Amino acid sequence: CQQNSHGVIVAWIAVQNNLALTHSISPVFTQPWRLNQNQDPSCDREFADPAPKWLDPCPVLRHYSDISTLHQTPPEESSELPHRKSRILCFGGLHYDEIIRCEADTILNESNPASRTQAPGGVALNVARTLAALGNTVGLSSRVGADREGVELLDYVTRLGITAVSIQTDNAHATARYTAVLDHTSNLILGLADMGIYDDFKPIHWQQGRQEIKHWDYWCVDTNLPADTLHYLASEKAEQLLFAVVTSPAKAHRLRGVLPTVDTLFVNRVEADTLVNSNTGASQTIEEKARALCDLGALRAIVTAGVDGAAWAGPDSFGHIACPTINPQSVSGAGDVLAGTTMAALLSGDTLEQALTYGTCAAALGTLSDMNDPHLSWSLIKDKLAHNDA
Picture 1 (spheres, rainbow, N blue to C red):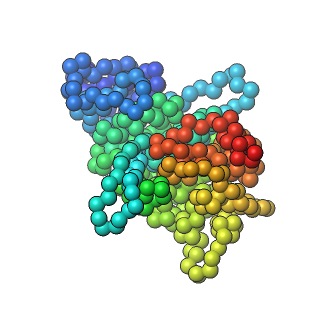
Picture 2 (cartoon, helix red, strand yellow):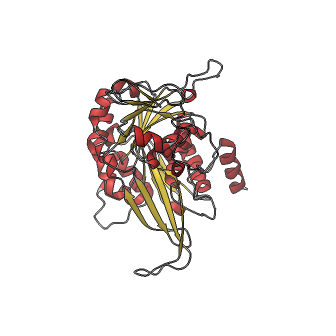
Picture 3 (spheres, one colour):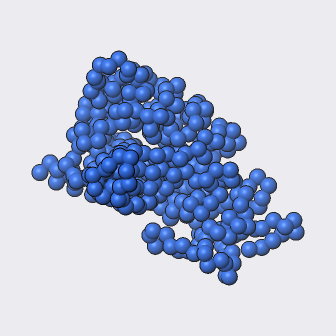
């Protein structure tokens, strides 16, 4: 650490990651650092997967707790590539997903034996991680708390090779968390979303930093963003394609006013009902729901239905893709893997039907772990499809 004449603590951040934590009044941090060789031992923590211990949350939060925004320089495109990679910026959720699994038949209103795991998640992160694994240049913009979880997640993002784009740090709210309670067969019993921090992700942030987002070719938003922020980004998208992923039935309505600006929409069947106001009691197939979403303005719509597969609809066609046969361990985040893989295939030039075929296969592979990270590759997806067709 170094202290300047005004008593401001200056922490130097890893230059090898081109990372800078900035505040509107504070200096920009761009140099390698080690905060304190005699730091508090209670701050030591091993991450889930091996990584250089270049970022220690405790001294940062202890000495500089009012950090507001993280900026990271996007990687340069190699001139040796045969064609330019797709560059897509994801806006939305970055938090921990906690999985609580009941170990026997669930008895409501009683104590149930269970086990617990957690992993980095959030719809925007899950989509961004999938896109990056499949060869795209990816950015992520979100909001975290000034706490240990927030710093761990920022470290995780940079280690994935995802560009941090104006990730805000909020001193008033803790980093968000999603908790999924599963029965012993891995079906979701209850999902709990502590996401209040995202409600302050307001348009004024982007009005002040428009240039940081305009150079990305494609945008993906999730409905953790407030409705006014979704409206603002939709109005600013210009030539960018806009993908949208609904995060829950409770937040689906936030997209209703911007559907005509959405190029590809991802929802599950319950979220689709919310968007199309399906209260007539008449049963709709997921294909009919996808077509109804296109009627409301979306250029293309995908409606997922778990083991029942997924439906797609576009300007001139629609259809259904079956779910590959698999024994799931956790369904948490599977829809995000489907969305990210489908986007990657669309950006590579595949048809919507073929892209969704890849997406449903990748989602099935994603259910084999509680860690939200199936370590995807195109070869793995295509091998699974070939095996499933055999």
